[in-house]
Length: 385
Image 1: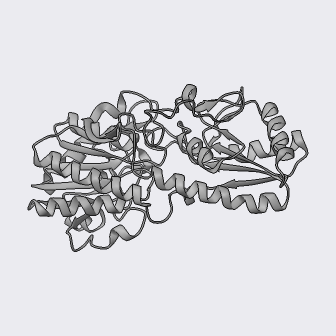
Image 2: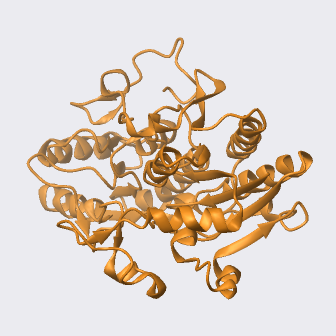
Image 3: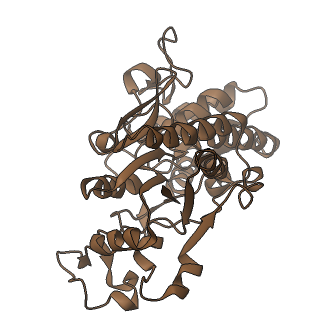
């Protein structure tokens, strides 16, 4: 038995412990593990007719080769946002040009057949893709094409539908709380309003939980457009009520003002997403204009997912890895490992495409005060979801 493993999308702390645990568990069973480098890009760019390309895109993994990778963050296999089912002209490998037609308004080509050929060429019997909903959407395609797949959810946004927890979330919240509280020092020293922007495209969970734990004055999340004039009055009052004469605001990068749009820029990636970022600066400038108070603006951004994972992310990453390999050992396929109601389980792999996971605004957020408001804790899971 030979397992292929890959990591796609944004890197998060916990990926390397997950990779290591897959390799060790598979090794105990006498199975081989092949690392596919740069996410689904490895399957797109590997040329079966050019053995030398394997050095760049394929990496055999053994317990010895992964012995120390769990000691640091990021992903040993590297990553990309490649989607073999939607390849633009600029991303098409030279050796595939002319073999797949570019179609549709986006002028993309479906190179899934090539990915399947690569799996067959490499003798890969099953895939363990680790990623968010974009990466896992192509895992669903692979499953439908007959490939044995057991997927592992990861994203610091914690927004993969079908699981209460994704690898990377705990560390992202931990980092965010640390930086938010550290920013109290310069903000208070200069008696300003701090606007701290955190990652979070469609789900404001990371910003909400970070704001809840750091006890900030106001939190703006992706799910609820905000009235900047009301916010200005609120934070001015917060500042006056604070003996140290400052206020703290946390904002999701996917948040928007009433009547406004999400701030995006750049070209769409292979999953149809542009880059986000800048709403914190825009909001800070508006608050300064409305209140006359100077602003400290800070994008935490990649620091949220920098460095080694915390203990919770290590625990979940290793447990997900063992569960995924165990599913394959038992002959199962087309599954995604998950946590539900505090227990490890599995769900059909296409569950991630069947819904949206968003903040439960009615239970966890005050839409008038723009701040976390946990109405009931009893019987809620650890992270309130």
